[in-house]
Length: 188
Length: 429
Image (cartoon, rainbow over all chains, first blue to last red; front, top):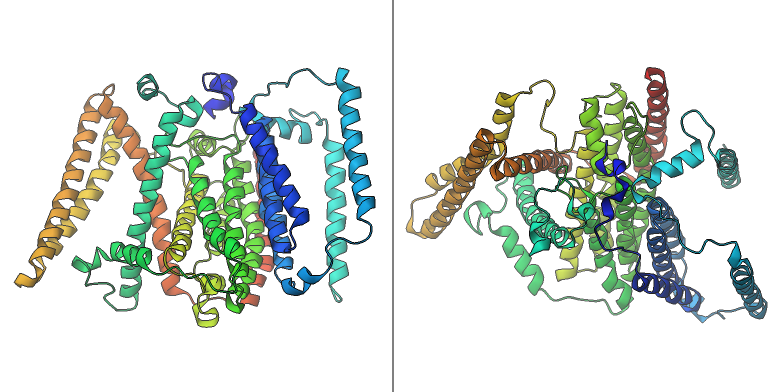
């Protein structure tokens, strides 16, 4: 058995990684590259900026002591989905696209929607302050994967907290995959 | 000073012991080691390929072309670095760096021994897969930024190939991870060190577990990892007979060499995943069957024997050099190299003997560490030779064959192995 599993306090002697510097660095990188995503004319540049955003968010997950989510974020979004995005975007004629108008007429509506969402988040934080914990729960990072497995699949014969939702979600995804295959294939 | 010495005697990798200084030292050692390994691999590949084709290979730069990699590196560094006029300069510049970073970042979780790793993550194998899957971004962006037809086709082929083979690879890896949970607690692990320790506890390498299930999963991984690193017979992204040089057609000089360095580093990295998951990582062969101090001592002589054998071959080479005065410098150089190898062999022998006689001494700890690292590198080296062997033996796949093998053969087999492993695991428990 992994010695780290038995001793959660193994990192006790070292300086914590979750310093404010790293938070502001990662958050800044995420916001700036997110702005690049929507302002670049070149679609490939936007996609590359989106990869930086996703990696910064993965770093933020690491700071929240959730390494499993960070790993999945890198493997599924940055490594899988973005490669497929690039695969499609690379075939687009960049010269023609860059001459087209970048924003269509509904951008004020989009701005309004974005502001409404921001207001919702801010009000949720301000109004719900009493409901939120005043400090972060220190989770043992060294058994993160095992804890997620217990929550999703259950442990020691008991059904996990999220087993039902998880299985329903996977069934939905399976239906979506089959639907995509049927729509693209004329003859099966 | 305290931070330098406080790590001695720790049984944890420096990253987990919280010692940043030693973590940094390990990073530098690994970086230097990989760079040297790539140089050696470059020479061995050219020599081995040449001998497969009944040629001599490099013979002029140094004795038997031993200095050829250095000459190549010098040439590549001095060569003009051309960025095509129509290329997207920024992305063109960033692309090889992405590939190199992705290839080298995974080394921080590779376990060369129970404490001979930079760090041990709870998500080790997931981290390795995720970061090495970022390597394809370097290839894709390089192909696109070149703004040229062949690179673009190479990049498209590469992304399609990687996405297809990653699926089968992931399934094979999951069946190995499932095997780690075959213990009393029923708790598996993703940590690289934990996976090797699980094999140690269960007393079996996962390649032999639930025979032939472990072996099939290993075979699927061994095929997929060749496709992942764009090596022959899956080297369609750089198929030189069709696409000039594929995605790196427009690259020259140092940038091109960064791609090559990244490719070889990625080859070593995926070989280490295979060794860790299925071949017992740092463990020596038959730790259960041939145990006891006598066998321990015999197996600890292997590093010394390897270097001794190399020294012997080099001595024979020195003796067989032509005797004209023209070759005098080469003879001297090869002789010095042989003496150096022999000296290393003697040092290793000394450590093995002293470490064996006194279990508590520093030499014993050294001997242990050398054994772990030696067996790990030995297993990885076999894979590296296989990569060359494949390249010399098999013709390249056609693209539709590549896709049908990936989706219609490897994926169903790996899914079947995954399900069977789960069933057998539950039944046995």
